[in-house]
Length: 202
Length: 180
Image 1 (tube, helix red, strand yellow):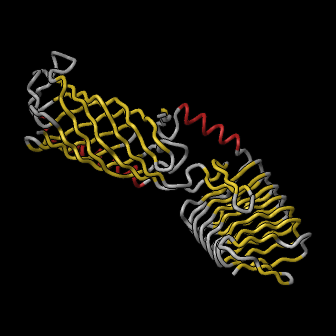
Image 2 (tube, each protein chain N blue to C red; image 1 turned 90 degrees about the vertical axis):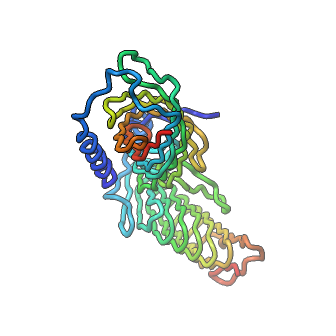
């Protein structure tokens, strides 16, 4: 619960921060006037409010960190009349999902050395450590010199210890507050995680 | 072969919801009086199958009047099973497991644990060093000890079958089998 409150608080602070320069001159209808950069590197902290992938390890409420790199591939974007651009984003994220206290059916039985059947795992009763390797299309919209937003659909390869490799859809939206020429505070919301980090444009 | 993980918005979306519904149906009748957390007692009763788990925390659990019940927990937890067909526990060190008036009981425990089986057909347990397994009024009691253990028994159809997994033969005396 506290984590959810924290997410809301962070989102609120970010909204206040980006609201301050909202009166700044719009560049949305000036295609090509966004920041020029070859790569965006974004270290970030993560929250995982959704249940982790895999066969029932962990519970919603994960936390961790990661890094995202985004390389512009269509500088003028998909909409010629707007200041938008498209980048290819990829990175690595790690989230720890704590074990839960659950009641329910058994998900794994083993035969002990004495020949008895013993349940050793129920849904969610073990903590999960998940690595994600996301690959996304980052569609940027540059509103002002201080404010930009993006949508990021894509896929992530996930690795869950003791559970193997899988694929997870990625559907996130985010915003940046460019408080310096090449540095921004970046908030990302969506699935499979929420992030707060700093973007460095090179 | 990678597989597509279900997309769970909130904690539920269509595949997730379906899975939860199926699990709920499978566990129908499985009731607990509250959360199963550190220092708390939680209980499961009625229905087909119910397994209580408390992650890595200490807790105290009980179940009764089920076809199959069990517990999964870490160190210093306890579980009490009564009047069911099957019951099992998987636990860490210093756990206590009581199984009474059942058909079958089974356990995997860590060290210094205390297991009591009474009034049933089969009790099949695997325990860590320093553990004690009480076998009372059983048809069959089978114990595998990893290290030293004690198996006091009484009223059984047969003497407990004890295997000392560390090597060596178990020592039998009236009412007691041990591994050193």
